[in-house]
Amino acid sequence: MKLIVGLGNPGFLYARNRHNIGFMCVSHLSRTYKITFDRKQGHARTGIGSIGRYKVVVARPQTYMNASGESVSALLKRLNVKPTDLIVIHDDLDLPVGKIRLRLGGSSGGHKGIDSIIARTGTPDFYRVRVGIGRPEAETNAAELKEEAVIGYVLSDFTPEEKKVIDETIPRVGEAIAYLLSAGLNAAMNKYN
Image (cartoon, rainbow, N blue to C red; front, top):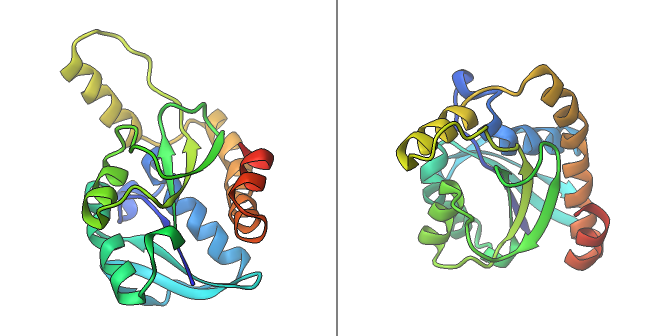
């Protein structure tokens, strides 16, 4: 069984934010494979279904981004899934809008949701599907003002131009995950990175 988690913040207020691209992607993936989020477990909305020959659980944590590890670690335990069978979809400031990068393990790159998952599971060894959201223009060198600008940026909605790109990216993320499952990481990285 594979656990596919899209990261984001719960609630209507955050629904279209850049930070919620993980939620958007996992929701599209679930619709594509006719999986409904009809369960509440591990502090998440979940659904069970299949992608190809793999049984999957899709999840949207309801713990807010910075505490994603609480939900993910609870789901891994409850479902008896190893971290190496975990795929996490999340936003990435360091990639241009709409770019996709797949990888296994590594650092969080400063992403608080990934930090939380690593801390709660005790390992960085899980699959990541990073979706580029770009980075705000730096108007100052002061670190605290830069951090404030980043927070404001990730919690804002995509511009109309960005939304056009993202609307094309979201289905590609689902295709990349299906290909990752069927062909393995190296093939998926060669095709989608």
